[in-house]
Image (cartoon, rainbow, N blue to C red; front, side, top):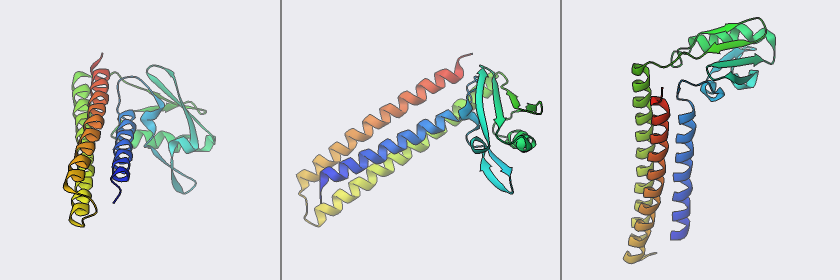
Length: 187
């Protein structure tokens, strides 16, 4: 068993978990408009469900306004309906026949606190995922020691490297969550 490969594989997995967490952070509302807020919106067009960004261009011309320009004007109503029916966002779009405008309401204190709870939940899910990756790597190290392909000292060295990697990624996760929480709570 190649311990360096196991360490690099675990590092890559931890990195992908951190990237996934960053993507999840983009979906959280902070009181300012950004096109990433609508990434998970699916629109029913042409008889199938498609992501919003596949059927329209999304921009944020102002801090509290999103503007959606459909590639095909016939999809205007479907886009408005998809945004309106998404309860997680709680937005009310308006269209003028050419574009859909979504006014982003200011967040109340209660809404901000609930967003922070969602943020902490996502951070904990990511941390659990990372701990599972560490557990899996430890298990592979123990199995390699049982198979006599590595010695006890090598296994302890491997576990120390994995723990160090986990600590680095956990610190990065905590920093990302702290910055996002500060951004959410800023009025």
